[in-house]
Image 1 (cartoon, rainbow, N blue to C red):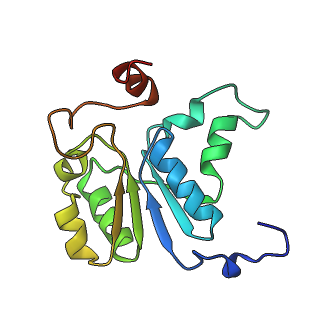
Image 2 (cartoon, rainbow, N blue to C red; image 1 turned 90 degrees about the horizontal axis):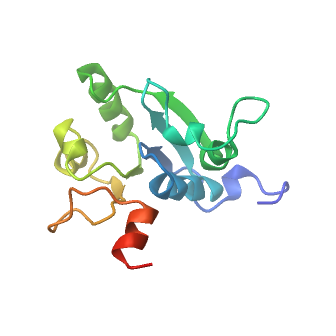
Length: 156
């Protein structure tokens, strides 16, 4: 984006994205949507926020470069999705969202009462991006998946 380009001129201007993901893959997707003009709201846990805040050496302001890269183009809010009032607040955000980015282990949102069936009833037009190491179905769906695990499984 050049300085002459306004946010309103970008292709995703007016699109509302909720980023409830952590650890690079799905949060990076939300960051890119923000690069194209989407209004991205990063939802973080109240006990320390996204773990990427602590990746690497802090700058003089206390932020790490990993966090500054991931958090760009985003506003942040803390919501405790383990609490009923946090779940209700999250549902209110979903009502006005266009996209949800998440990368919890399969079944986590469902356990909190925030699975696809629930969210789709709240907002039938919602697009839900789910990034997992092994997908939502299949024998490995409950396993964590990060780059190093993928390298090991792939024999790299």
